[in-house]
Image 1 (cartoon, rainbow, N blue to C red):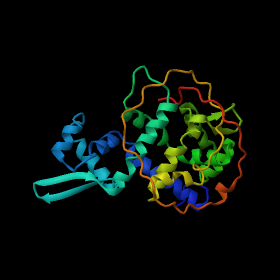
Image 2: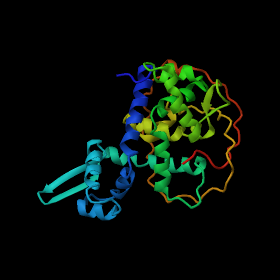
Image 3: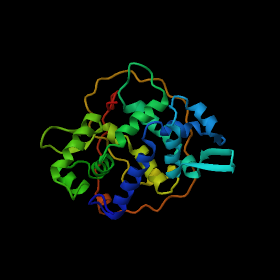
Length: 280
């Protein structure tokens, strides 16, 4: 079932990425996935690694991750059960350092140095907002659009004014810019910088290797970055701890280009990007 007025392949692409974000954004899910990195663990071993979860919280989280196809439960005997990543879960892990890289460049700095896991959770919260993926897709492909035009594409079966709450939220989050009421909307530098993350999520959700994100018909094409918001500059934080790297060397996916992706773009000089960025 179509969720936007975009061509079928673009609509399906956005729906898959939205579903992928829904799998990993809920609280503690990424921490559980990282805790399972390595050999499969018994429930008690995993519980010891995520000891901040209260009694009764871990089991439903594990079940949801198993239902999503990211974690598998293996019953060796009636008294010996282990949990570990599926192949899909393993393939998703390299997206996490991409998110950290984006967060380090674009998220507002905090009073304290944040660990990589908090960078990931903060970033996922922004990306998983309702209609965010569709709005970002349209603005990336068309460079700018009015609120009414966005509404016709993103939520064709709804009153067009309903597009403004998610749009205002994306502006407040620092991912979208506008010059004021009645003016077109465009991606901010931070929104445009999401290309590697959203391209990788698209590739993963389509069953393609992550390094093929560069071939994505929207996020894979180099385009000039919009003028950045006038955020207050601040010193960048130290680099986060290393996370798994993306695999390389796989063949290119057969991406499809449709109407939305056929708009020609004109290269423009890239503006310098100040430190700081979207609100946490």
